Image 1 (cartoon, rainbow, N blue to C red):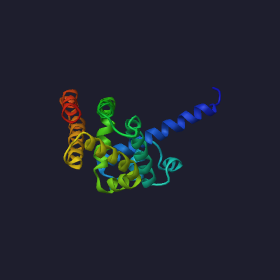
Image 2: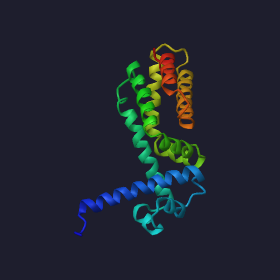
Image 3: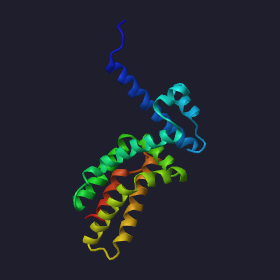
Image 4: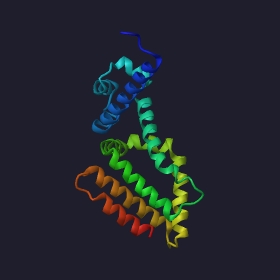
Length: 192
């Protein structure tokens, strides 16, 4: 058997880090960030506790990297929204793309949702990504204002609550929730 190549070692490192992040998402979602420990994550990932520290400095570092990985996925949804102003097509694309992501990896998004509603995790999400949220918040408000809504803030809040509710209902019951039909109702109500 020949020695491993540098490319093989790199693949092992990438795979191990992904396994640890997946395990952390599971443990943080199921037990709560506060109750989770590096030991529990390492056991779930089937790696030694010492090896965990080769990849992550602490439980908080692990959480930050996990959240950044998830935010990158959310940002993918928003990259095509990086326009001067939102249009009907932009929001239609946003809704369609978000639903496609949910359907492609429902379990991952369910765990993320369960983890993200924990108060200590929510604080970190808001602190780390406040500028991104503020930028899109302003674009939504401008969109609803240009659409002629009397109270663009109220319409934005309503849209956000409805869209979050659609995502949450699908995540909690993916086999029975009619996500495509509800998605079309959402588009019809807010865009067309």
